[in-house]
Image (cartoon, rainbow, N blue to C red; front, side):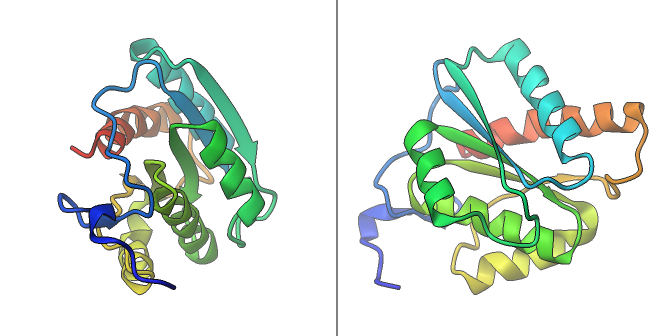
Length: 176
């Protein structure tokens, strides 16, 4: 991979981005992209987060994308399409080995295109997320961490996790 220009390195958080585009200062008026990796309950978490975020933020558009294999990175064409159509992205869910690393790499691919991406992972995979970020040279990528598990949770547990996602995703997007 070619070296990135120094102007693409965001000092706060060490997120290396190819696009020389700062983090947004506000979320109102942005286009939200949601990337669902088709894991069990990812849809419930993402749809719930979309509704919760929409209570406080006036997005101009919300586009929902699905990749049909959670154990593979999103196709480069899908990443390019999302980057062209969205200003910020929420992606989920990293709650097992391969899906976690792929979810993180999808977020990194978007960040390298200048799109702030909030990647949802569970507590059991924080270390794997750290290793993936380090291996691909983006240690500053901050995930949204929710309690594990997500595959067998109640509606009340979904709601609790959605509240965490809504709060933490905003901090990730704004670089707080």
